[in-house]
Image 1 (spheres, rainbow, N blue to C red):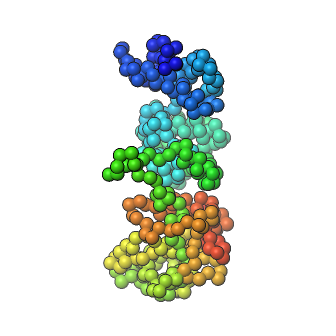
Image 2 (image 1 turned 180 degrees about the horizontal axis):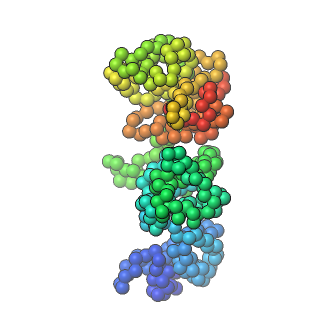
Length: 396
């Protein structure tokens, strides 16, 4: 009320000119909005406010009036307005228009895949805006990754050349998106890793709580987010197993039918597509790593009760190697990700939740051939899970 008694209608309307819809007879809410945002600086106890250049008139209002109320004048920082991934302006209130610092690999991929990126169109192209405003200011070059039959990789040392080639349709939108995805994930990986620290995870959860989803519950009693809903690797029941028997699937030439001891009363039946990569002799009596809490699924009429985890390189010809437990391991030994050893696995991963699929994006093989999730080693009590040769591979 004190602020409203000082601000004129003219100043309130002017402050919101670039963020509030301008009409001849504005709603009272549109006139109050700039003042409420200005007061946020005091009631959130901030040192500075950061926004796009479209916020500058609200910042000016805050600098003019807050000191009159006895409040400290805050620092204001602005960045250029850039196109969002959806074609309009990038906005924090439109999730699909932006990429957050803590977006996971699969979220970056999903947003870029859906992004507006019309061939030859450099106007309102959010993918190009990331190249211009994020990648080139941080790196001296940008590489478009392409199949050799389409000209192979091309290295750019200035943004204007990228824009010219895209306008001339010498760079395909699919190649641009894939290359931007790769470059952005390299930038974001160390930030994501840093924010795996418990203190920072707690800080992030407090600053940006998940919206409540009150489905069928009583009013005022929204459904609480539980630990079970958090997508963390301790939810996976991964164990060491020993292959007792291997035979060809009776109805599929590309599949093996295996009996694997995972430390239970009876061995589990596992169907795996390894015929093209390993002989029966190579699998027989081998120690392997299994994901044991996927929902059992029929594969060509036979129920598979676990997934045999392998390292894979997708280039042609595809290469696949089973993961290797440390020497001396026994069937049933638990496999965990470093830092997540205390969590309890789900009894069964619900397919609709896609917990494994979300975690799998970050399951990789390191340059030392260690199996890792977000650069944290997969371990047993005896040491690290490894593969023989497939450095940089995915785990599937």
